[in-house]
Amino acid sequence: LHHFPEPERLLSTIKTLVKPGGFITVMCEPVGSEANGPQMVRDLLKGINEQVFTLDEYVWMFEAAGLHVERARVDEHSLKAILSFRAEEKMFDYRRFPRKVNVGCGWDLREGYLNVDAQDFHKPDLVADVTKLDMLPAGYYEEILACDVLEHIGRTETLEVLAEWNRLLAKGGLLRLRVPNVLGLADLLRRQENQSPERHEELVQCLFGTQAYTEDFHRTTFTELLLRDFLQRAGFSVVSLDEMHTWLFDVVASKVREPELGCVGSPGEFVTRCYAEILGREPDDEGRRFFVGKLEARELNRRQVADIISSSEEARTRRR
Image (cartoon, rainbow, N blue to C red):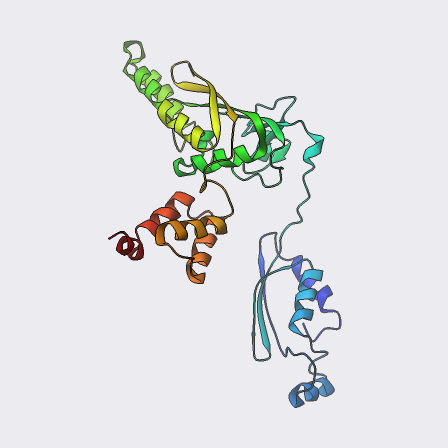
């Protein structure tokens, strides 16, 4: 880069070769606060280097070219950096939409709701992961509708997702759920009138999803006992819970308080709390970086992190 009079323009050109989410690696030398070293001066005079930049100037240059610095390290006078190209994100204007949210809407686009789905081919108002709706404000919405959604989310993530939906609702706001009832399905599978391969296939699909595309797999199911417990821990009071067609629960719950501690907070706050409650200390830097990184990358969920810390030798020794 230091061989070019306008290095940020060169970076912008290189960026066109990289798709969003891709990386550019650079190595630049020399790097210094000023060209006061004899070798630097000699190279400048000979024209080997057009110019010399400081680390701060390189960072400014990267950002001016629309690149994000993932990692950067200076070894003596040499800079090594990994840059990423992120597609520009437009701010979502939630104020243009009603104060009701239809999460995981699929083809069921409803008037009077902000329709949200992870699949753009459903043509929702907002394409987003319904488990992490950071672009939507807390305590703003009157109602969240989640029909046939919660079963598509991993079993160990149920409580965390309910806590995220709690965050969006104003106090007294309503959560409307429709989820499968595993005991009801078991009852239907046993009934005499359902004893045919075709009918069993239909009911098994109700349990595991159509599996027609990536998101249409069921990853959990519910009993009334489990459902009431999850909702209570996530800060909801059940207004009504009815069976539909024997194999579904139709639920209305009201937000009455914030979720239990451990269900909410940033990954860093959660890891700090786990260390405090399980190990009785602050997290060390290496442990904090590891677990926060795994949570942010969704390679581990919160329950798995707590289980790993609880099963550590340090935790077992502390319990003795």
